[in-house]
Image (cartoon, rainbow over all chains, first blue to last red; front, top):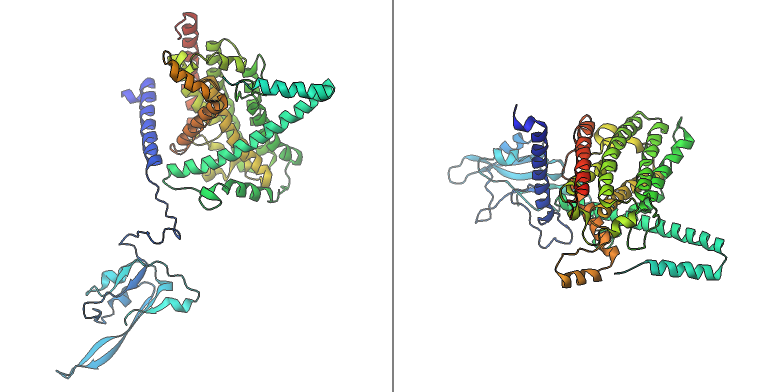
Length: 148
Length: 358
């Protein structure tokens, strides 16, 4: 029989484990609190970089997005949130027809922020940023064209 | 040393000088009743606010901050909400007992509350078997809880009330043993006398080991007595919705709620009276200037300081420990706390007889 299973040992063991719990909560009592007083602390608000609030298209130095209109994000999206509209343009040098992005439509209202589209993208053309103040009065305003 | 008897006897003389003796006694009774109720409600409000803030701090939150400065008006908003809610009458419930139950609970808690010695001479009920009266008054609160569960025609209420009855009656035993231990040490049951004896040293220092053990057992049993976590099986919300007060609404629920909070205050108050010296200041032998400074702090500040510290400790327990399993509650009481309490009482008696106390 182990000592911790005897009567006295049980009391001592239990007291020790209860004191461990008390020490943990006491530490928590004195740590700085994590509550965000949101509208007041808007200027100093820090949001984690990995927070997924809104899909956007990062631009390169020339101001172009990296989208190649492959449509992988559209097929990866479980909610049909993304619609990639393409158009064909004729390349002037070779004379071949080429598929390019026409409109990248993103419906914030049906997005569930699963990040599957970002993971599916072969060119890192889309990403999530942390602009979370997205409330609007009309649902139609949630349907956004991401490419400029 | 401050003494409230000067003020109370001055009021007594004044009332006797302006009206006949009988009328004066009645007036005094009414005055005391009003003061007790006001103090009762005031402490309940302070405690509910404290519970919210302390709970928040233990969970790394800020707690209420919006209603009033630093959330100070939050409790008043809660009380107002409670007051304007409808008191629903339940079909097939025992109407008389259903309405009587919350008042019994509050009555027991007010009776116990009036035994607390807030300061020298600032105590409503004080007579030679004060500790007995205190126990008797505090133990009929369980009757109200049992009636509430029985009369509300709801199986969850019934189970909650039965659990509560089993738990409170068994833990009363430990509380009684701890109080007896301190009565053995002090040699009196009069509460004012018990406090008076601690002027030259609090009982927890005077009684050393047995007093410390009694103090710890008292805190555990007191926590169980107030039906608070980790002993909140009577109202275990995951199993029994809200236990015995499931069917109560509005101010009837409010009475249960306030009584629960005030029982916590009472448990802490009695603990500070019996173990930490009530309103007596902290003296250290040999440090005369330190003792003189301590004398300047009024007794009521000492009493409330100790009481609120113990309340904080009990809240600390509440927000640390998970709820006990239902068969562990009687095990803890009957297999651990009662035997230890009995042995502790014996040790204390030996200590007092052999004069091994400080």
